[in-house]
Picture: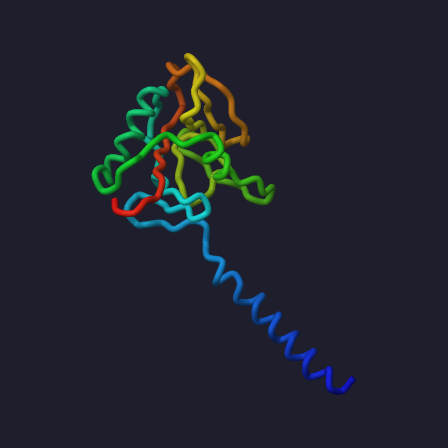
Length: 164
């Protein structure tokens, strides 16, 4: 028994050391790139840090996202509208998280690294004359006419790739 005691203590110290260092090795999900973009390491994508900052219909949102946010236009390529699943991954379901208030006065439970000006964001998913919208106030999605624009936003996303 006395021989096992040093081994037991060594194992316990090793476990405690590994547990205390694991957050450092795990890394954070988001990195603010300091240029109006945020890298999402979990999804392997880059988000615009801000949406388009105004009401927009789906077709205009698609064009806005294709060219990317004006402040970084030309710096990166392959911008697009996000899928519903990509947007859903940004919703914070933790009941303790209060979220933040957008410019339009809506409280959203969006990850704090990305700032929305209002809580409804167009997705790339379409069906005839409708497109899917994600609601960051309540964490659900629905289909809306593409021509509607009031309070809807465009949030560009791009897949990470080598080069640009």
